[in-house]
Amino acid sequence: MVISGCDGSLGPRRPLTAWYAPHSGYAPPQPAVDEEKGAVFSATGDGHVIARTLGSGRQLWATRVGRSRPEGENLVTRAGVVVAPVLFHTVGLDALTGVELWRYRAPPDTIDGGALAPGSLGGVHVDADNFSVYIPAWGGSISAIDLRTGGVRWVWQPEPGIPHRFGAQGVRVSGGTVYATVWHFLNATGTVCEGWVLALDAVTGRQIWRTTLPRRSSHLCLPGAPAVTPGRVIVSMITGEVFGLDAQTGAVAWSVPRQMPDATGVFNAVISGPVAFGREVYVDGGTETLRALSADDGRVLWRTRYSGQLKHDLLATDRWLYGADGWNLHVFDRRTGRLHVTLRDPGSRHDGLFAATPAAAGGRIFAPVSAGLWAFPSH
Image 1 (cartoon, helix red, strand yellow):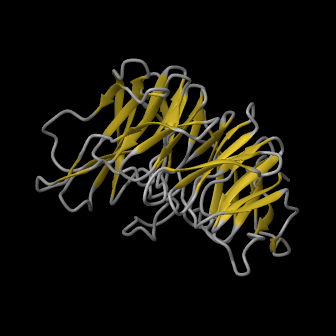
Image 2 (cartoon, helix red, strand yellow):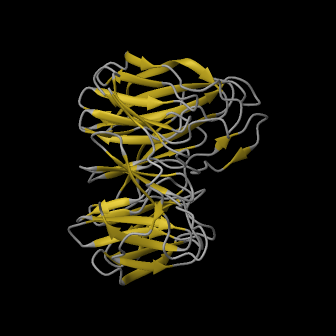
């Protein structure tokens, strides 16, 4: 195991800029990239999705998808369609023209006490294959929607009669299976929460397995989507515990203990999900510590300390890890964990906000910032 620390000489920097495209306000979704079409798609604070060329940042189109900003964790593009989770609906756009193809509302969220509200998409992670987009929502639903038409292929929901509130938080599709994280409150106030991990058949929605994690917490206990590697599904809890599950059976193959005291509030919690690259998985420990784990057995490969806590999921590339703690974007060497450099938004007169997980394509990084999209060469 390699242990590295933050080098004080690596202060915030402003690197070379390929282009910087201002827009109105910030939104949480990670941009989506289509390298074949040479376009990057990003969300704005005033409810738009904007398509820009990868090379110059020239705007190709802008489409309003809601009255408020998109609130999902990511945009996704597949088979000529861009999908944007807003707050209480999801929109499918033609990737070439920006024309709205469909709009979908998830099943209602049954609040304790009987009141109904639309299924929220706040902070959820969507995924897609070339046929369907898979949309998790509060209320405990996962919907498979036809990419081109918006038609409903199937909807998963927990069996009737289980008390208290559910929420599906993130999905990842791999090899014809949709893996999902679901939180379930065990009381009406949400102070006791259990986490479920699901495997669903991508074509039919049939539940292949469901695992209840052997750890309880509070609030929304499973942040983000599962990380998927060959033979393993990895999830982390807001308490910082990490679980590696057998992808075929759902059995817990290994676990890593939490690195922090029990979480009693949203400010004492890990709020980013695990991210995989190859047979490794990268997790924030919630204690100004980033770790690389073997996906096979949970062994710690390296641990590095830095000043901050991730507010969004990491971006993993062949060489680097990019992680935003709010005002800073930290760049770590993926192989060793060494903090390479800390970046600041060059377009802000003050400290700009890194609003979402960046995207990568063609040797460039596309980072959503407080009032625009910033493209710069990868390191």
